[in-house]
Length: 264
Image (tube, rainbow, N blue to C red):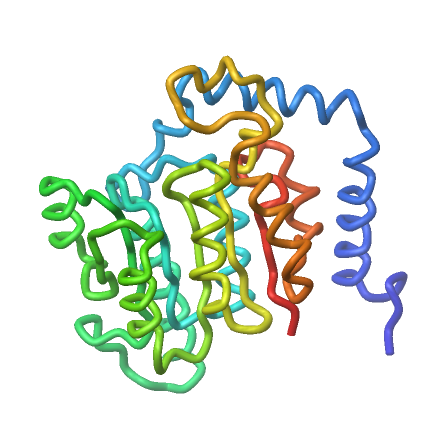
């Protein structure tokens, strides 16, 4: 077997790991990153980007990392809480479309865009009519199902669990209300649907790392946010762990400690 010195791919991967492993020890760079992200939130930077025509409201680096996760896991169902303009649903749907395309190439089969194998389920307490219309008119709409209602009720959790039946690999993305209580409830309801080796992604954990002045009109704050809910969840659910490879390499991210992988 070739070692890292004779295998250029292994050498590249090793060098990349070495760089990333050094990032946590660079205190100045870590502070600069938090300062930049704080400024980005105050200036609504993440509102500037679309995915295939729909506003996605995410940092570009997080979208790239999300693509890496989807490609690695190859889910056939993605469950998302929080829909907004639908950009994240379209992002997920397009990544699943590429997985179906890759399968078709490997198997020598033909794709039917109207009957996809892989689907996205979005949940939101208020799906605005104009957003629903544009999502349903999007070319990726055949891959997207939506449920309107609070994500933290027994009734909605039962609907989602019923929807997830029959899917082999499930990935969950939580990005709705960002208080500790709400995220803790979502984790309790939806993390169990995550299949071994897949992920439960918890967005806006960055709130814990920023000054409360960034969110003066919001119910979340330091000590009461998605990251505190993640920390509590991990204490009680040892079958999940933070994927530190992703967690350390991004720096510019709204999801520190939020890349939760269910152990195989």
